[in-house]
Image (cartoon, rainbow, N blue to C red; front, side, top):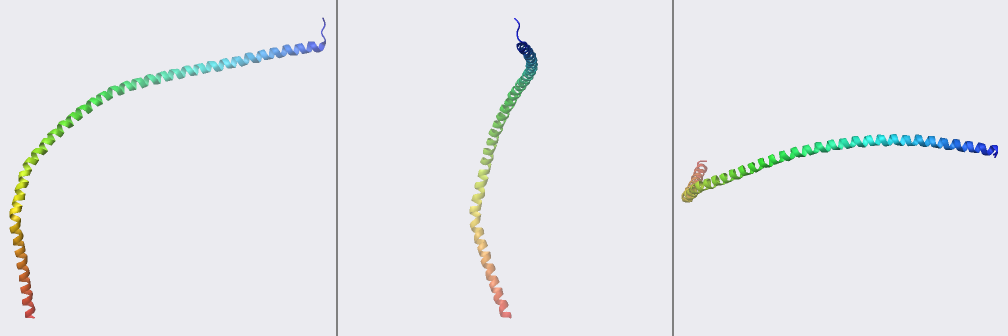
Length: 144
């Protein structure tokens, strides 16, 4: 079975082509393997970073929770103190009004009793002053 030379050359070319395809496939899969390894390492590092960040966030949240509870306790104490102060202030204001109210009534009564005579006196003084002024002006005009 002797095959013509063209077929032998064609077989050699085919075998060579298959060998080259296999070599390129091996290189291609090796590069894909390297990329997958690199991706795997990157994902692992990312996972570690995310885990570390989540642990840090968890610690921060725990600390904030403790501080917020303490702050809320302080706010409760502050509101209780403000409530007590406002009650005491309210009592003080009521006492002050009870003290000031009679004084105000006394001032109003005194003003009501003194005002009419003082107004009459002011009117009398004003009228007298005008009369004297008019009289003096009359005398001055006669002298001239």
